[in-house]
Image (cartoon, rainbow, N blue to C red; front, side, top):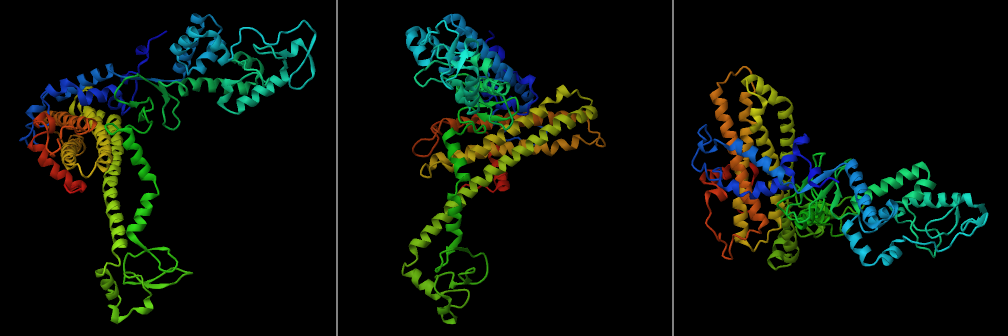
Length: 576
């Protein structure tokens, strides 16, 4: 039997965009490797440098990324299983239990399925109380109804007499004819996976009906269904394995117990959280993701919008939105009630004396007396809540869109541009890996940045110190990402034009700059992820950082200056 380590998926065997960045060990080491803190590529290493070719601190960044990638793969905390792998593991488990307990493979299969395919649980229960386990599972060691030496027996279902050759019994000995058995088994299989716990048709009997009887008595179609249910039960009943939630994917993920990071990547390139099976969302916890996704799909936001942007018709109570024009409102048919938008009074009582079509003296007077305080307060609260949610949702969605675009750009880079660059600059594609590393970094950072906006939405307003520290780290990471994305997307284009015969020195300077920005951006996001996963504990009750902030933690003045550009580009501001 091969060990789990032998079955680990090597990222080199999968041509997947996300394999390097979405494996569990990659992210653990990507954000927490102590070696990264000493590699000289910290966020503040280029604090006063400009975006020109003089990126001296970036000289060995590309080599560092390659070494880190190899280390991450060695620490992978999960394995991806294809259907053949699942079947092999299932057969190995059955063979092991059958050998140790000296029982048939059919009985071993029944035992393992009952105990959710846990070999250790089967052994513990069996050796603690074999008779109790047999009675519970239905593995009888002797028939309940001994077969007498007769020529014919009565079927317990159709009550017809049949010769012994046409009578079949489970371990209990209750006699039923082949035809009734086939109908009973086929009907159970068609009812769904519950057929895996099939028992003797006799109502008073608990004897298990195993795989051998299904293969002997069921139709070919039902045999195939039963085998499929049995295979899927190894994943669905096993607490260590889960199916990949991507549509059409038939792979499963076996997760190592005790691993701290739940983000995994399947062979189909889909990355998800093994704990909640939502898309990969580190560093945000599953609870926050669940609330955010529910809020995005909930009707409550529709109600908030209606409350903030409409008023009910005074007659029929239908909500009406006013987006332009005067204060004279006419409700839609069949109501057709005419009223004032401000005071909601009948328009027949309005005119020049009340302020005309664009004002309402009655409303102003009543407002001063406090008549509309409660309604206006509710509407204002709903409007503020909606604006706050919209602020975070738009940036969450924008980074998702940017990530999808970056994935498409990366695929084009791998399929088209790398070969073109190799021809133009006479450089082997193996030496252009720094470009792929940069795009992989962009894709991963867009994912992280997207989920930080969900984190920020649920950050309590009264914890101003944590919010300020969070927005500072988020801004540093975002500005670093914008510089890297700009360099990889725009500056690279000048080297893809055959007419522009650029000297190799300029291309080498671009290599150093891009690799350095990749390393610097990685450090920015290390600090952001580390801070969020630790609950921003570095901020004390007074709202200040409890430790000195160094260049390795948040970057230098270059990063802070860059954040202003990023804010102007995305619409962020400190008050948000």
